[in-house]
Length: 475
Picture 1 (cartoon, rainbow, N blue to C red):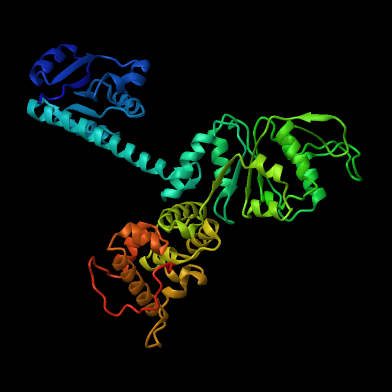
Picture 2: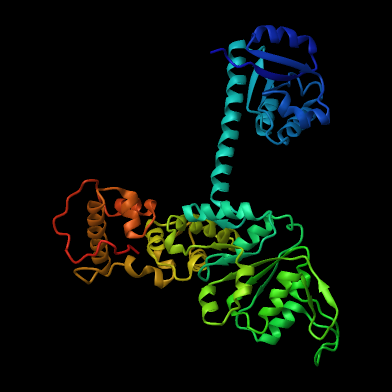
């Protein structure tokens, strides 16, 4: 295979030196010489060459030391700038040190050894390529597990991210379901940010635990004199969200008396303010969220069926955290970094015991509870590591060993998990994916449990109690 031709942009005041240098480097290098670099050339330099060589010989004696360093800065500020190699006089130590400090990949002393110069240029190019590829991989991995502010690598979350990207450009109504604390508003904001309405802020409102009259005023606004104390006209959330997105949280709590008015907004794109007769026209996209079963509320007569179908054009379900345990370390470290920056703390990691406690907890409060638990740990720790005792007491239960007992609760739970996993693996023929489904856990979480419990493949256990049901879930 022929060697790739390396394009080198050679900046030098001695243009007579360019041709001899090109002949000496050989056909594997294409040298383009210039005595100056204009601003527009600086911006386009990444597409023009694979490496830049700067001639800094006698820069200090010619009074060009500072201008040479400014040129290094200019090239270094170009996004994805090519690597820089400097040609310096052997005795000009200060120029060499300043060039390296400003970001030059390497220096070659004058007169240059051609073999050394070829190696330095080729190595600089390969190093820069490796750095850029690593950046692309990090960005790819990061974006694969992230949608706006939502994080998750579990298959259910990845499917949700794909669906959100598909529906975001289309002005359809969306119903987001899921338990409290799973991040329903974050998903709504992600859809809004991916839509053509992202130039205007999303308007959010929660329908929970508010009187019907207050919700009506908040959503539809009122005219001057509509009621006692209404001294001026007030626009409601729906009108404020014109040309944008309206997010209605806890839509299942919306009073029956207000549901026909919301239905008219969805159908006719119009409404009247409280106490007014003038019709207000709006262009608004509606995204709703609930932790309740709306279809059940429809059967009970607590939610209008026609409104339910209007809202439920696309339904998206956010899984609870206990069903995507593989995401717990990802989320925990994200919250750790954010909280440490917020409070100016040194926390950088979790101890092994603390991380196991986070992974084993059932998280009834979901992601919001995890965020609060990590925030507590960051606030309490004085060093770089969050320990188990700095997490909330509810998480520490089975991870804290009581020394005075001959048989601790932790050991009993550990043995139970070990016997249950071994039995399930045997019944599923040691097929881990099938075993994980039977246990109700993610495959990656099952792998971590096997490592923690020192379970080896094809291990035979004789004391598996018959009363252990194969469908028991590992929590």
